[in-house]
Every structure is written in C-alpha cells, then in structure tokens.
Length: 365
Image (cartoon, rainbow, N blue to C red; front, side):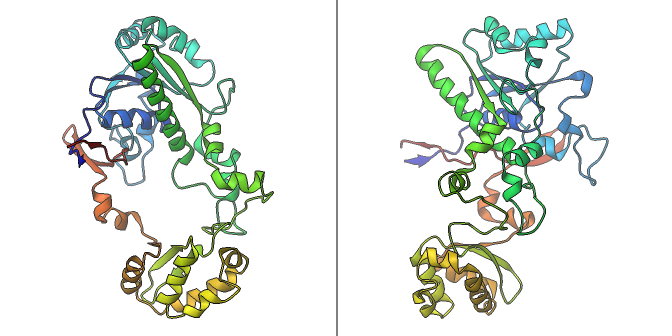
C-alpha cells in the first residue's frame, strides 16, 4: 500500500449547492470541496452573505469582506450571490440545481418551503438529487438553533467546567461540528444508494440528536449506572489518574491518561516509586477512582521534581499516555499539526486554514 500525495480527485465530478450558513452545513461543503467537489456557496445578496463574514475579532479589519471565522469552513468554494426571494434569482438557482448532485441546507422549519427550495421542489428539477438538511431540534421544531443553546440543552454545559464553577461551553461550536460529521456520513450513504439504485434521497440531521449521540459513556453512566454526571474539570469519572493537571519543575503543565494497570505501574516506576502501584488503595483502577484525590497529591509532589523535557521523553519511551497543555501557537509548531495546514490565496491575500480532512487515503501499489 502507498499513501497518495493528493486525494482531491475523489469527488472531482461532484457538484454541490450549499444553501447553508454559519458552521455545521458549511463544514460539510468544505469537506467535499477538499475532496475535489465543485461547491457553490449561495449567499443572500440582500444580507451581505453568510453572517460569519461579520464575526470578526477585535484585531481584524472591519472593512475586510471576510473574517477568520468565515474562512474556517469556506475556502475552496465558489461564492454565488443570490436573493432567492426574487423570482428571477430563484430561477438562477434552479438552473444550477439541474445538474447538481447534492444540496446542503439548514433552514428553519417551513422556511425552505416558503423560499421554494425544499426537497420536494428541487427533486422535481433534479430527480437524482441528494438533499442534505440540518435542523436544530428536529424537522418539526420551529426553534432557532445556536450551538451554545444546544450545548446547554443537551447536558454538555452542565457537565463541563471545574467542580463548583458555573457551567461552561466548549471553546468551539462542538455540536455544529458533530452534526456536520453526522451529515457527511448520511450523504456518503446516500451516494452509495445513488450509485447502486440510481435514486436520490433526502437525508436530515438534527443538532440535538447529534449532541445526544455524542454523550457516549456519560449517557450510559446515567442510563445504566444511575450516575448523574457533573462538573469534574478534566477528570474522567471512570478512570484515574486521567485528566488531573500536574506542573513540572520548570513550570510546564501536563496531564496523563492512565487507562490500564500496566500504564500506572510504568508511571510509578518512572517517578521512582514502584511500590505505589502495589498499594491496595491504588492497585486497581476502581481503587484509584475511589482514592483519586489522595493519589493526585502523591503524584503531584513527585512529578514536580522533574523538568518537562526529561519527563516527557521518558513517558514516550515507556508508552505512558502524557500530554502537554499547549496553546495554539505551540500546537501549530508541532510537525504533525503543520501537515494539517492548508494555504491558499484569495484576491492576493494569503490565507491559512486547517484541513477538514483528518484521514489518510491509501491506494494499492
């Protein structure tokens, strides 16, 4: 097997119409654009396009037509300005749909029908069309969906934060991104169906359902074990030590994800305290969870004796899961992160974004 240098020809014959704004829907369009699809982003000329064009940081130029936020999921697309409430411009959209493969939308309940861009209408223009829609709380709900609201309503904010603190949202629009991944999967299934059965489809994803589907073990901790997850900072409710924060002698902050007894034994050997792993209070994961506070203080004092580089290298050598708490400047200095960067120019301006594609595609030799 060999790794291909480029995977941008996988969907080179695919035409996608993006009738979506902000993050969830556009992230799907960006994914396919990176894989070579021709993605036309339809923006309302009456409202100056996608609202994220105006979501600028304090240090961004207010006169620039784009924001950093906008570029996170909108590079490689063709921007088409249309006010589809005007019949003549709606017809221009219909003309684009005639040979389109996929339409991505994120209208509130009923708005797609009012604007005459719903699946029933567009599939009459293109019978094999895959119509992929995102909604907030289900197709029949009139509620406007914002990621913050979804993080609150789905339990994420209740669980997130340090013990005793106020609820905290994630620093990215996590539910939007999760829903985007769900919609990508639905589209890919619809494409397989199209290639096999020559039929289009309407696939739909709810932000709320996507959030619930991502609660994973926290959901079953409640549903099966009756444990109501609450704020514990970075601590894992089922594993210890996992998520505790430690400082090295030279003031770097690190954390461990000790998922097995073997890893805990290796950590104890590294800090020159091998007998700790045989102490009945810490010998098993369950006992470590029960006694994690006392264990944390013991480990903290020993780890504080190490300089970061020495400790980090020894952890990697012994296969002890360790992570340094890095800011984004440090993150994008890592070789692995550099490989994820995408650089391009738009109207003479150099722009760098992160690729939406985190997988490697392999071809036979």
